[in-house]
Amino acid sequence: MTSEVTENPLAASLMGLCASNRVAQAVGVAASLGVADELASGPRSAEDLATAVGAHPGALRRLLRALSDVGVFQEREDGIFAPTPLGDLLRSDWPHSMRGYALLTSSPFHRAAWTGLEHSVRTGESAFAHIHGQELFEYLPDHPADGELLNGAMIAVSGQFIAPAFAACDFAPGEAIVDVGGGHGAVLASILAAHPGTEGVLFDLPGVIATSGDQFRRAGVEDRCRKVAGDFFESVPSGADTYVLSHIIHDWDDDRAVRILASCREAMKPEGRVLLGEALLNEGPAPSRVKWLDLEMLVLTSGGRQRTRSEYEHLFQRAGLQPTGTPAQSPIFNVLEARHA
Image (cartoon, rainbow, N blue to C red; front, side):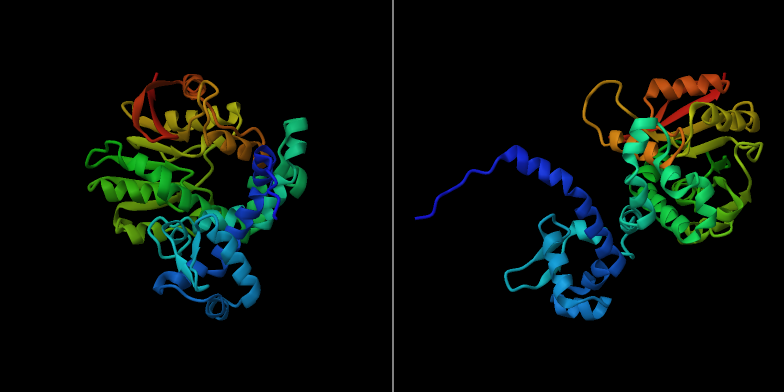
């Protein structure tokens, strides 16, 4: 006779939460190996996949069967592994692939920063600087491979969550748009592709601008965009109709955020506007993924944070801008508009 022992569901739930970092690491390893790319042609055995990606067959099988339990792959009864819609997002050739995000969150430099979360909670200071000895934006130029990982993650997140919101806004033919701190240009490329006749300027630091351009070629808008290098704390390209700030302001404390917004106000036409895209915190206690992104800002940046709508509107006002509406929004991501006060 077998005795049935009841499992404590709360303990099991807490154990699952504590082990979630393992899932992130496993997803990142699968992304790095290119397993999803190899499964694009159909189901395969772990042994076959191991040969293709350069892995140990037994160890790869253990990785794949664990990831099958969370839906990234499917383990069939015959031991063969098949692709899933979730796992397809790790393919390098998939539209709006999330592979770049998986690679970032499993990377040593990113995970090391999160080991300093307690330091951040105790002091309010950046865990990244505490662990790595440099602020994030000082560190990245000295570690270009890690910088590419961060850019790849931002392209992935932009493609899925941010670019569609900006592309849904109204832009008139002939409108000049400056993407301030636009990285490799995923958001600007999406806007220009969705609105024929518009023209764009991608504005970012020299090291970022030097490696950008692929997004515009892929979107077929290279002839309508130029790239300009500079520092948005000092100035931004002048005379445009719209200044786009996509996931930029959340990187900075209030004073530096106001300086960036003021740079845009000083540069834009009298009838121009700022479109600020951010994931908004709820005013109350309702559950939201944005709270975890806010912790990411605590860990990675010095003073960066997610904010509520009213907090962003206060920043607008400090910068001499008047909030004028919300042209587009998604479940967590909003585009806020402001014009000269």
